Image (cartoon, rainbow, N blue to C red):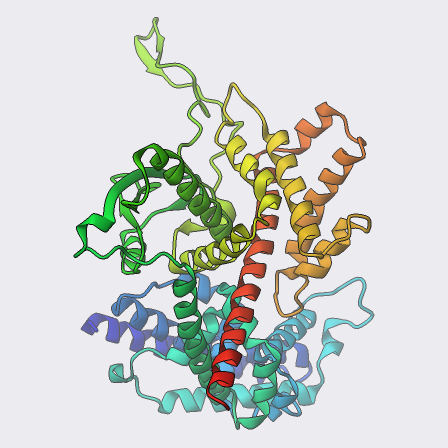
Length: 519
């Protein structure tokens, strides 16, 4: 680590701890305002958490990781959690931390209580000053003072490296599968065996990584197509390259390199443009030249189907061309200058601010690929024909051909067929209720928001079904963002089904091996 980085960490630590002390000093002068004392004590704890976050992010960046300091520092819950993770005596603020299976709930309880201490809520009979007792405020102040002293005694040691356990847990909300594991029944039950939060988190990380390795082996084995033996030249006959464009993600070389390490017939190559890549497929001698066209087309279509679902993005053979202008140039004759006039009716979509294609996207793609492959083998993939047509129509949308409504309706009907196929809806009951049942997750902070957004687009589809909306009204309500939101509903649903399939197959494989070993 650079000397200036070490000095920066020490400077940040000193500033944050001094600021935390100032908050505590101020709180001690407000005995008649326990709600303000409570808030100031939490601000002091957040300053302590900020120290840890800066250390994690800077060390992570030093060793080649990604640093998102801005996002973390703005996240009150993350700062508070970082401060509290090492406390064995959480009974200072809770009767028994083991009674709360989700450590983040403790943070959420404290943060929400702090908000009620600060703001008047018309629907709440209690005023902010009555939300917290003097005893609660005192306990929070004492906790903050204890944490400040503890942090002052700790010397920064670069040799200890990044706080792997804390960094892993803090990033769990960005990883669907990791969150699912953390809040599983097995993990929650295990919490009673540990003396403090950190030990439990360390066990979680090690178990998750062990299971992830096993699932990865299974996934890659299930991908099924082994690399052609290069020593046997007659096996390797054709090499086909296809350019793929993205409407939603940028492509980084790091992810391309990770993909190409896999033992696969498919290789990916970057181009000079960061929204495209080259898909290369090796086909064997057994594929006749006359059959090569259809073989390659079907293979790339299936690859793209899985990639579009697994990333919640848009990847295709080409992108719409006339989305902003149709002319070559416009010249102002009087002023002898070129001018540009563009339409912005068709926005460039970046799905959920996804940004760059990352390893989690590729893991999701692989699992979707495996799941859909199992359905394809049994001839049970017909429910995605309409999804594929939706993808086709998106590629056609430009200034001259506006088919957002048609694309939306294809995705909407594909969703209905997905739910019917998996018995998550009987075709008669409310589809909105089925959506709520499938996507509701009390451990996910944005669960209600996701359900609300999906319910809104489902309602539009239902009104089209019942002919309750005119063509003109439909065009006003449906744009590309609506289309992509409808698509995302299917994507998230199939990603969930893919993970379930992989885990069930993994468990069945373990049972088979156990039975075979006679244990």
